[in-house]
Length: 417
Image (tube, rainbow, N blue to C red):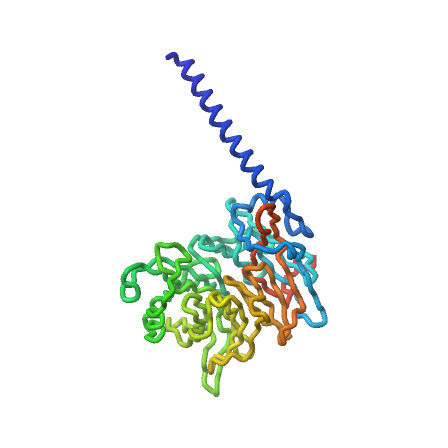
């Protein structure tokens, strides 16, 4: 066979391959367009192009047809709600927004990296900088204009907190062999990682070490009947810690100090616990929830010294928000609906106590955030406008992991623009 004939065959083969590839891309585009072309654009929150770009990475919840028109701010009672601006980030794509109480977008963050990922957390840092967490991929810091100052790769997950001195507290995990706790399989051990302002690692604190030191909690873990593998089947996800709150002052009860400034409050989902850890001693000094919580999220310390937590009710089928007196473990306030199942997020969820005593709640799995008074009246409500209309299946709405109400918007001069 001549050399020129071989070249012709190679050219024909290349042309055929390119034709197949081009046809595949066209078919894929049209199949995506069939579903996305009926997507709706609500008040500049999205565009068809953004929907197409993020389609493979979306996190959705099914919604009924009658709820499709619930988008953006659907309820607002200014005389009863707590003013401020809202920091919003949806789980189906990178980026986030500041928007006012009426739903008007004031500022937008974008992901300027070559390979963008879905943003799980945006946490205000200082000097108009923000921390961004992408689940089990990276943690990075951006400025007001979304320029990246540094990025750290790793299996970071669920939450990040900022200490008074600028240190950054974040969760990570890895597979570990702990025969005394799990003789037949490895576990997924959570770690608290403390970073410097520029993203350098200062300290690791493993959760398994702290639990092995606490005989009561260890016995409860050994009696655990349900095993979860939420981060992969290669290891038992025994802890699944999902929130961090740095205690910013000493907390006293009956004249005795219960917690000191610098201790850290965690929610440990798969142990149905909220715990407080002495970071210097690397020791659990307080715990609550084994008989009450059901895969809870987002434990926070309130101004009155009580603890607020979003109790998902994963197995019960209804959610609650609880305020707990850490001194005696008493539930002093509770929010749930009647019927109970009307308020339910099996996963995720958050609750923020506002300055006027109201509570901002993220019913994450419904893509809904709402503000209630102390007696449970809904005075503000927001539905994620990221909606996908589907012809042969239920419509879907993107979930919302958390939303934060910013009480001091003057801290961000850019909002005035």
